[in-house]
Image (cartoon, rainbow, N blue to C red):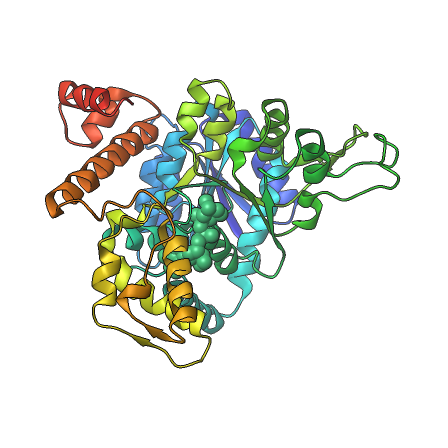
Length: 442
Ligand SMILES: Nc1ncnc2c1ncn2[C@@H]1O[C@H](COP(=O)(O)OP(=O)(O)OP(=O)(O)O)[C@@H](O)[C@H]1O
Ligand SMILES: [Mg+2]
């Protein structure tokens, strides 16, 4: 496998090229972006490992150049400084395979390169078939044709190709578990385990041992050594649901796993390397938790590298009819059923505070009560806070308000709390943006 190392920092460039060559990769190095472009024009490379910031042509431009060329199967790994993580995220969106934050030990790159090699060694035909299966699998798993859900599917597909930490946000029942599992199933890790950890259900004092395992005798009751969830997920994906529930004093340990990929069992001080992809989910607005100092800001930024927000169902009611079809098939399990023609109309009038899960439960109950014949009178949503008594314009106002609030919040989070940047992203004057924040109490 041919690797091109691009860095204007001489020492890092030489030591990295040396170490990669000793690890068996055919390695060439370039001291500048332009030199890299020349080398790329003359020969092909499987992987380009490039610094993000360089004096002439920076890593981002190099990436764009590589990805513009239709023939280039070349994967790009970005080396970035801690402070430029937002740029690195941008790079991933433009098709970079992964990024690694400086300073790092050269050998940390090797597993990444090996994964790329494994993939490229599969025969191309097989790859094609697999990719098409993946796509139809994706469309069958995550239903919805609203622009928001198409974007979710696009991100799922994109993020399944790399290994960076993902944060899933969204209200209860919007599909965070589903998305996490789908990413795992589409990723190169699919043959290893997908381990879900519900961070809300562990008492504080057991959290650490549950995640990282413990040594025999490390605390009262620890009669034998126990593996933690990270051990179970080795080679696969760990899904940390309700990650905001991890107590503050354990958050630092999670940060360490993300940054160094090492864990320490309770009762030992021996670091153990783990190869696990982390997907975290939260129903909360994490940035607010950060402001309230119940969530570490460094952990937040580390988790928030790749982000997928699952929008509430009431903001994408066009998804409701196909979801009803999908869920009913799942509920009926091959038994016959019928759906009254006014049933969907009725469902469209509810605001679905419990989102898709509430819809599924509503349909399930109607299916059971009606023996497969689903009539409007059987469709009583389970959650409170319906606005059915309201006029159409009242419902419209509520929906507009909620959507506005979400967009403001999302823009703020994406801009890492910078109001001017968030206003610009929304195409709004800063003063207007401020007024709106005030109106929503954000
Ligand atoms: N877009 C979708 N397409 C198909 N099924 C969906 C979709 N979104 C959600 N579901 C289904 O709705 C139910 C709830 O979804 P899920 O458990 O993933 O939500 P969640 O966001 O994890 O909720 P919570 O925050 O309460 O844990 C599941 O049965 C899931 O399969
Ligand atoms: Mg969930």
